[in-house]
Structures are given as C-alpha cells and as structure tokens.
Image (cartoon, rainbow, N blue to C red; front, side):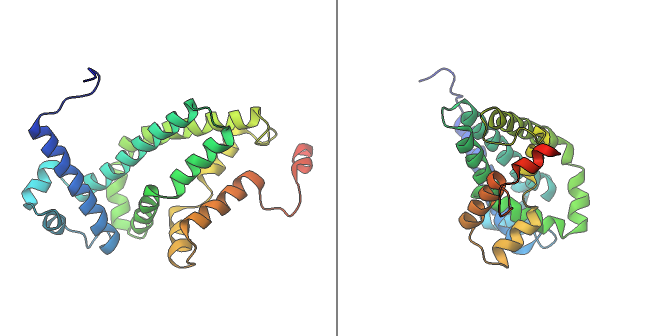
Length: 217
C-alpha cells in the first residue's frame, strides 16, 4: 500500500461517512425548503440519526452551508490544478473550468446561493463565515488569471484587454440568481446554457469582429 495514502480507523471512516450523509441531506432540505424552513431535526431525520449527532459534526446551519461550499471549492481547486498541469490546450482548460463553475455539482451551489440571497437573515448569518472561504476564492481566482494570461500569450484571448478584466469577466458571466432564473424560469438546459456562455466568453456578442476597435482604445 502506498505510504502516502492516509490510513483511517474504522471509527474515523464511519465518522466521515456520517458527515457526508449529513451534508447531502442538508443540501437536499435547503434546496427544497430554503434557509429558514430548514431544521436540524429534519436533517437528522433524513439521515436516520439523532439531532444531537448532527450537532457533534456541525454546530449550526451556517456551519453546514460553509462546509458544503468549502468542499466544492477545494475540489474545484484540485481539478483546476490538474488541468493546468495537463497537455490540453488553454482553450480546453478554460472550457473545462467554465463547465465546472456553471454546471454539474456547482449548479446546485448556484441554486443554493440564489436561495440565500433571497433571505436577508441567512446572508447576515453567513457573512460571519465568509473569511474562512475567502482564501479558497482567491486561490481559484489566481488559477484563472494564470490560464487567462496563457490564453493571451497563445493568441486565444485578446491581449489588448487587461488579464484581470478577462479574469473578472470569466466569473461574472452570470450571477447565481440570474443563473437559477434562466434554468428554472426560462427553462434553458444547463448544458445548452454552458455552451452559450462559452461562446460569449470566447467570441463576444457582436455581430462582427470588434478586435480592431479594441486595438484603437
């Protein structure tokens, strides 16, 4: 067995599995009922454990939500690092990250963020947890900046636009609330929306090429 692979005791594995179940149940209840209607009692019931056991892992709903976002950001960081080290083109790297940010697992996070934005009480409660997640956000943003600069160096992205602007545009294509509205109200399929976002980011929205105009700026 590889010496670098961590070894867990049976108790540690059981604790980790129980924590994963709690997080999945919490996510489901939050998306179904929203922040205020979600209770630790229902989360415990869905897992089939006592409420006190939930509190052994997480002291509050805010801690649960924080952990959901933390795990996703950690996973996204790992996937971006793997992409950066890969031999695929920078366009494929950026497309893969875009799909991760706006689709799949993170789509559920966007829906959850949209629900939280609609609840002033939950926003205030989560502000106290924001700093612990900021470091992950900064690391992800730095990775995107590296990819943007690589894209400019290879001619994929316009070198006349500051890299930090292109980095910001990558994350600013849609807010969580607008993303959720397009999916749930406009009934656009996530894969279709992601493809459209890819086109907007790499080609813009003008009917003709505008790069010469940008060069004059």
